[in-house]
Length: 409
Image 1: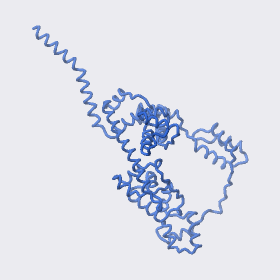
Image 2: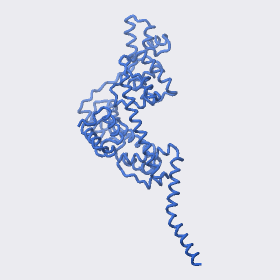
Image 3: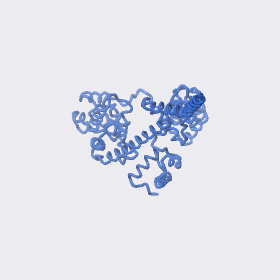
Image 4: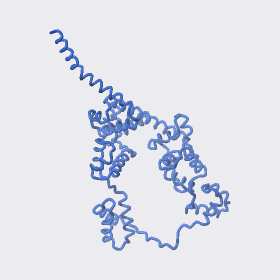
């Protein structure tokens, strides 16, 4: 009887001693399987959340992250390491694509030979164009603001590129078209629009007039500016064109002095509220009674267009709430006592500021070079520099090493 009692107690102690380990094993198995089960979008949310802590040099609250995403710390660290490797590969590819594009630059055509870049990289053309980094390139983009600046070959190449690689023409097309054509993207948009919806402009009309005065045939003019589908269409548009309407009164141009501009800026700083220029206009009319309301309002619009209604405090508040709730704009808008749409706009501006091209001062470069020499991690280098993200430091480090300039300090 006693031996049975002892056996029972031993069994109880065994279960109690193994229960925490068993629960831990079950939890690990649950979370480990979760990383494979969740969607790619969910994995990106996890990585984005971790990147935020990295960017601000904050310790990761692993317990809270584990509860929030139901993924183990080990799995999240693994996902982050895989993403680091992917970003590193992308940076190396970007440098290689940019170098190949520069090497293939054709002076006569004014653009790079992207067919050769695609062959060397063995990746699709559009992906190569996305990887191209203009900040690392030695080739300057051409400025072709008028349709007359474009050659017939350039226009044909642009139209072929857009039609072959994009099913719909959206704003995302023009940065890639700009890289492919080595032309500023706004000029590519203008030229493609003129080809899609031909119309006579003052610059084109003047160029055709000069050619006609030089006895150039309409057939030759049509071949030089092939934006209209027929010679007759080009000729009719030329003869029907009117640059301006004489019946409309011409606006009086006001030359604003530096002192007057400073005065308007002071009034904007004092009375302007985002979305409401009325009080500024009232005060400006009192200060400049001899200038028309239209001219004053135009000057106010010019100044306020450079004033953002999003402050650094707004960005800090939204950043903290995104850390806590993810991109739940309805909830974040409620927390900051604003609309969900504006909450998202604050976050978008913050992300655009992060992506903006960064210039490096000589002091920042020297600090980075010392970090490279001492083997300092890029996260620590970012903290020491204080003005650059880890990714920016990493990209600059690779560039310095590829050019052999990592020791010039």
